[in-house]
Image 1: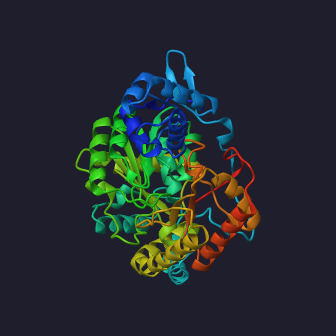
Image 2 (image 1 turned 90 degrees about the horizontal axis):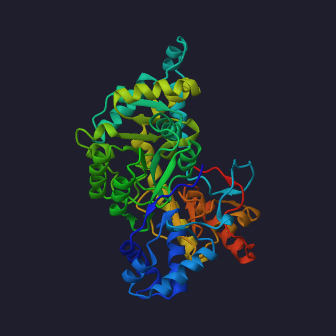
Image 3 (image 1 turned 90 degrees about the vertical axis):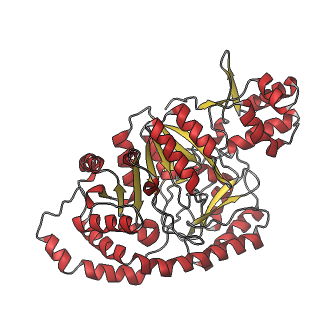
Length: 484
């Protein structure tokens, strides 16, 4: 897909971002470093036009020569390029571009590429036993194809939405093969190659892959340790008018942030005006560790904008990803179109898995009552191990979700991830989650979905990897594994 300009960055906006990075009156090297840092952290999008030299100099209170020298340095290092008559645009050196995705091999390493818990053994066994009884016998007397999903599972998902504060009918639910199929079907139905899709930066890697594979143009908005910048998100929606927007507002993957209700309402007001479809991923909503679980995003949408909100979810994070059960909640007409659209791909899902899902949804509260305290203890163990063995790393403890978004203090995550395989740890560098390839090289997503002893052992192996020394690297130039 050809490079496409993302937008224009105003001088006051850039000056505000730079003050915390380069100081009040930066020299040209500090100014260039500040721009690089913002770009690699995803706070400035790739292919964004930087302010004119004179305008930025005025906003920062420095000489134009200082800005000119900084832009020259950025161009020399590959972080910017200029077009005659078009200004200076952000870029990344070629060596920082990630290569193709590879699937993980089965081995004995500790796998931190997957932020997904093991199955709840007791609940799963009980659900399987119940599903293989009379309900399975009844369905076995039919052809077994249900493109919309089993009626009883659609009803169970709809009833849970209703109890959470969003009145929902079974006709508004489509059962899918996990949330990934739910998002992919929606992207494929509602967008065409070349359409813009607003995405968070960083974001869930597999959805970013789906956006790229569909030939869609990702328009990133940053999610930082402080959360979402509502002003940037709204201005991006107004200026770009993307066809769709994909958000993970509940315990965001990978940062763990929870979007405040005020920002949700502001975004809903903006998408009402722009006509943007909003895909809200609620896969992690129930993994609320320190706060009450949030109400459905769509429950805040008034009449007229509610039809623009498509909610996706799954059992992968609350129960078990091995079932591959997800869903879409939307208007009944869109559900019909999505069901028709999915038939050429897989016709329908497994009846047995859906019957198990019905039983598990009925046991959700009991499963969470056991699972959430365990995840809290695993989070505590991981954080303590990091503080003890890697004290220079920094992170914020998220109020929910399944991972820490760790700042390594240096752009070494890809080199660390590559070297860690030799020490028995599989993990993905932060660039894997960047909407702009090559960003977030100073970050690691470290899940606490594994048992506490494995979390602690993994940290020890990462510390050993660093102690052994990292090979020189210019970025994420290795084959990447799939993540969850």
